[in-house]
Length: 80
Picture 1 (cartoon, rainbow, N blue to C red):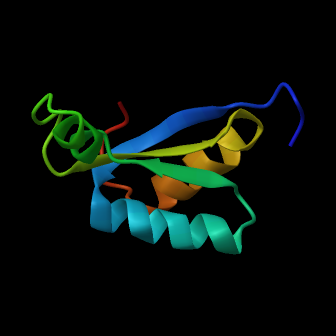
Picture 2 (cartoon, helix red, strand yellow; picture 1 turned 90 degrees about the vertical axis):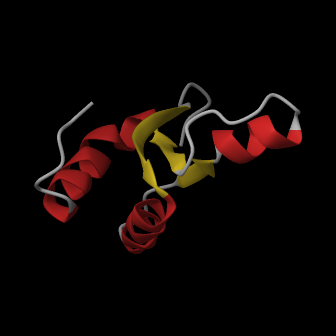
């Protein structure tokens, strides 16, 4: 991780899928964060963003490795 490295959204989906990817990323030493915009919106009084969807973020420098894992884990999902 460098000072210029930043987190980017790599996947948006159901929480259970994101948790599964998180576990794989941990095994592969890919640093990641989970953002639940729905929960944040509700807590902020703005209503729901996209119900049931959470975002998975990884370091930009680990993007290609993470994308390959996502493609192998969920081969039938369309890329967004």
